[in-house]
Amino acid sequence: MKPPFVLQLVGYSNCGKTTLLTKLIPWFERKGLRVGVVKHDGGHDFEWDQPEKDTWRYREAGASLVAITSRTKTAIVEQRPTRLPELIERLAQAGADLILVEGFKREGYSKLVLLRQPEDQELLHTVSKIQAVIAWEPVKENKWPQFSVHDADAIAEFVEQLLAKQRED
Image (cartoon, rainbow, N blue to C red; front, side, top):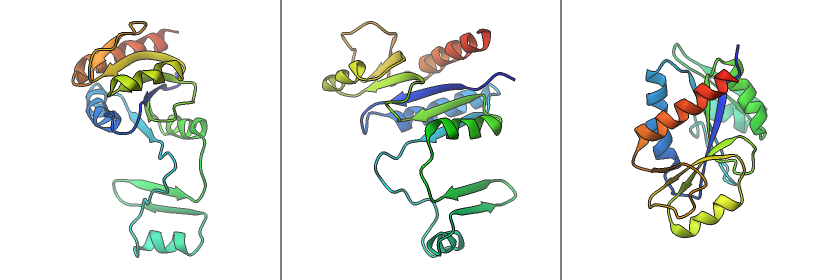
């Protein structure tokens, strides 16, 4: 079994990462791929479960791990940070074919870099393994393939080519 293809979408806040991901996910799921997604909550302390509900109460009581399951889904909340490679391994074990990662700029996986404003282009010089640039306006640097943030189909087709190449290797 081939490991899943991991692709990071990186960019500054409000550049369109989440919006693009919500367009790419159904595109790949329709192609029969199991898509896993990892979101980096840079510096915030997100709330997963709702205050005063049972899982929240268990966590507030000090449980290190809280799980909830139903007929259609399961969630596990851990009271610790988890490194990206471990999250990727867990999604791979769960059967993901493609893992889309929002954020984690400094990690070493293939990346799509999203640029909203011209001054955001400095990001191109600080991240590794850039596969393409996705921008709101054309970018002068042409070292990498470029796509409009509004052309999700072309971006998905490009990612599909990257995935096919990884499967050949």
